[in-house]
Image 1 (cartoon, rainbow, N blue to C red):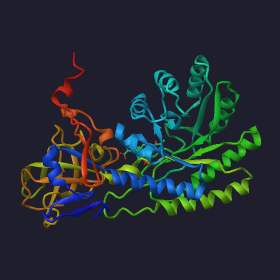
Image 2 (cartoon, helix red, strand yellow; image 1 turned 180 degrees about the vertical axis):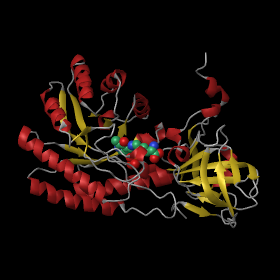
Image 3 (spheres, rainbow, N blue to C red; image 1 turned 90 degrees about the vertical axis):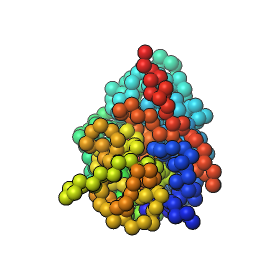
Image 4 (cartoon, rainbow, N blue to C red; image 1 turned 45 degrees about the horizontal axis):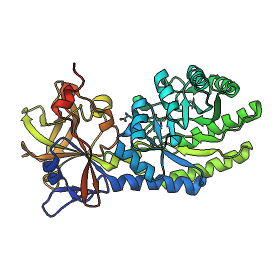
Length: 432
Ligand code: LLP
């Protein structure tokens, strides 16, 4: 099976984290997001152990909240020793309400509003990761008004194409994110940041993309960043304390996706960087990684109930479900692949090619095309879409006024609600 935490029990039902998914679907209703707490913790430990082993005890990991953000998740990643990457006042507020110490939070985004900046400073944000000069100036002004010295990193674009899908390609020179090294803007913004009284420049950040399987991408971007650090040291006398290399390691959505050995990747990256800093005559900065997808994707699954099964002879077969692009827009947006199973009969022969369609009012509302399910699948059967822990709940919407599904956590044979299902009253809550 695609994820290690899947199985089949004596009733022939699909299990997730050891629990019967059909029972859970009946208990909580569908659509239903399930998350396996043990798997999240396991994924966090893989990263934190590796980064500390190869880069030393002061290196760290930040959970990229955009992958999935709710209070319980911040508690779990904090317990596992992670800081967090946040991009909005909403993520800051959720982290705060979960008791997260914002000293360990890094505020990203390419356009922080004045309100975001003030709110984050008032709540003691550890670092802003500044995207551009205008933003450095805005943060400097607010910090001066509030009479604080604010730690920042500068987000730079190393000019690397990670060859993943366009929507998540962020390290190229023409990206909307960051200041490019190649154009000289990165150096200029560094000079300015160093001259500002209420700003303390701590180092640099880059993030080249997402769903990356090629470890060379990280080696190349670290080399470009270290060379930049060496140049800044030589020309401006400033030696970066922190280098944050972003997130992006890929996960397996379908059988043809490769496995990534995170420990081995981080080991090779550290070997390369240790050699490079020695050659460049700089000290190794404190290294951070910011995984999102690879922490939560395979810890998640979405359960649906099949509705209409429509066979158009000579054309297509559609299996419609009670959710769709409102709870998982990734196929509609990126054509992303997913593995789909009958949760009720995961071992039944999958002898019908079909499209898994959502219930929203548009033709593009599909979860996956050209998948295989049993030909006699019928209304009421439970269907599982696997590896949905990342960028599903966090990208969900109320399109067609559908309520968002709940997030139910599974932990050592127990289940508990981490996010409640939205009710009809929740849907009209802000209507006047
Ligand atoms: N750090 C920064 C600055 C980022 O922009 C991102 C992702 C990450 C870390 C985490 O990357 P990860 O480890 O999750 O790949 N909605 C898209 C993904 C957008 C990724 C945005 N940035 C999707 O559903 O595929």
